[in-house]
Image 1 (tube, rainbow, N blue to C red):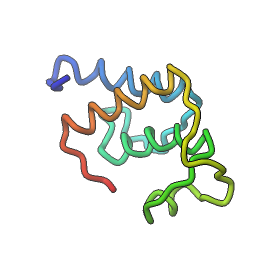
Image 2 (cartoon, helix red, strand yellow):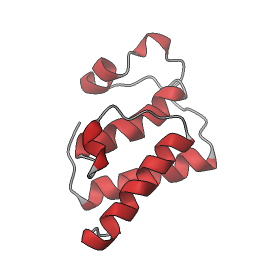
Image 3 (cartoon, helix red, strand yellow):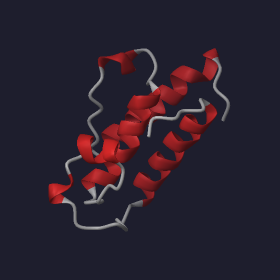
Image 4 (cartoon, rainbow, N blue to C red):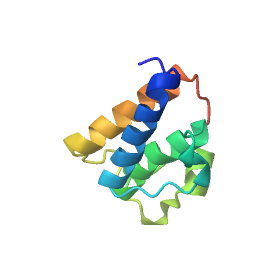
Length: 99
C-alpha cells in the first residue's frame, strides 16, 4: 500500500493496534503523529523478541538483549504474522533502511 495523507493515519492506527494486540510496547512518543522507520523496525522486531528470537545483527542484539532468546525460528500466530507483514509493507513503501 502506498501511503498518502488520507491513509497514513489509518496505517498508523493499524500498526499501533497490531502492536498493542500482540503486546508490543513501542517506546516513542513520536508515533503519535506517524511512526518513524525506527519505530516500525522496533515494532516488528519486538514481536520476534517476545517469541524468543535470537537476533543476529549488532543493532538488534543491542536493542533486544539476546540473553533470554531460545530460537531462530519462532512460532508466530496469524495475528502476529499479519502485523509483521503490514509493518514490512510500510517499511518497504517508505524505503526504510534501519538495520
